[in-house]
Image (cartoon, rainbow, N blue to C red):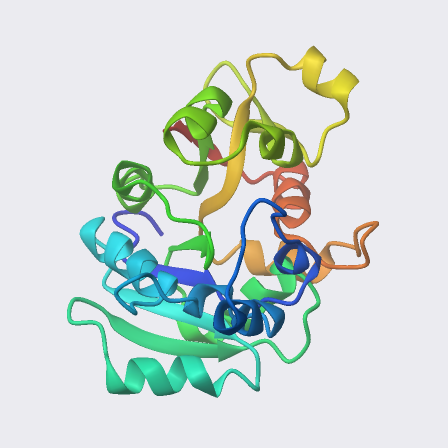
Length: 245
């Protein structure tokens, strides 16, 4: 399916290895720490009391998304309660339940029925993405992902430079498609890829990704991970266009 992708899957379940990692430079108050400890980083409020997740939903709406599927845990009633009481005005919400924190590929698989066969975006619930990056995927017309510039992330994205090496590096073909993705590269690999873009887990997929999510083996961290599922799909003929932010 091509055209605009106006559905987005937001990975809000938490408590996998990625969501358990804390930034030691960030100090949380007791309420914030409690939300984070229960996999609810997206519900941490700003100074005005607005959950971080609401800023993500607003950004998606600004980019042209009209329907969001929130992947949540069975016990995450606080998310449903909040948005039942304060529904977003520019998009509709649906929920998909990931029973156990088995990784981001498993989270996407949990949303299969909810996306109803449409092309869809995937993003994290604890990253705030630029509108231009989101819109580039909405209008892309084919599966793909966004490549961010590492220097720009630390300079403009309020991300500490020491965190950048933990993000995946992308290798792209001359015609603009993903050929390699290296998660948490070691120093030697990073030096060998000095001009590689960085992935922030911002994707556009069609329904073909679900087969890859089923087939991908567990990672060394014991989870079914979306980047590995994406590369599994590439190895079996899927083309993922890389869009530079």
